[in-house]
Amino acid sequence: MSAGPLTVAVLLGVLAGSVAPTLAGRYVVPNPRVARPRRAKRPRLGLAVAGGVAFGGLVAARGHDPALPVLLVIAVVGLVLAAVDLDCLRLPDPLVASAAVSGALGLGAVAVAGGEAARLSTALAGAAISLAGYVLLALLPGSRLGFGDVKLAAALGLPLGWLGWPALAWGLALPHVLGGLWALAQLLAGRIRRDTGWPFGPAILAGAWLAALLA
Image 1 (cartoon, rainbow, N blue to C red):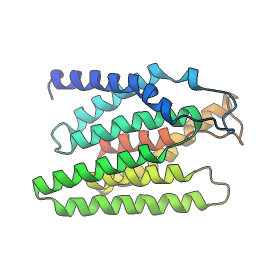
Image 2 (image 1 turned 45 degrees about the vertical axis):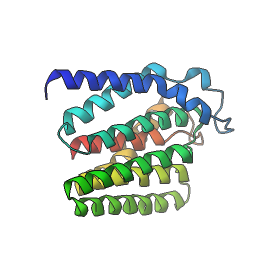
Image 3 (image 1 turned 90 degrees about the vertical axis):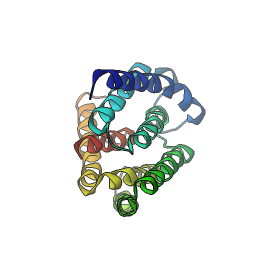
């Protein structure tokens, strides 16, 4: 891919990440599991960088995929979800539903236009498998997963299923690797305790993004 479209994608991603904290503000509510107010500490710069990397990676890896616009829309919603989860450990249903509906409608349109009904069936299977897997994990004794995480995983299972079984497998495994490494680093640094609540949504989103690149 030429540098022009990639540069545009990175800039658009930076813009999306920059405005994500502002869009997230309407969904942030006090949470007793958050030790201190974090609204003023939203990682605006970090999300801007994450947006640029997310958009650039998707365009570089899947630039010729007809479903690329759908993946980028989901990435925008994902940036807002990450901002909310980092602020107050919540993944609001309206935002998760936006990701799910965008994926379903967008991939449905791509399937109809390209005559890929079988691929859409795999996408739906991916959402169902992700939902079932995360429900089981959330019900395990001592699980830190909330049902916001479960619903987000199901929403992201749709595009991952569309990309194929390897992408779905990576998307199910990578969040736990990334989340575990982050939690371990925070524990070693003394920033959290074993009983401290911490956001898992960003790990689910990052794992899905990496899976899309690896597929």
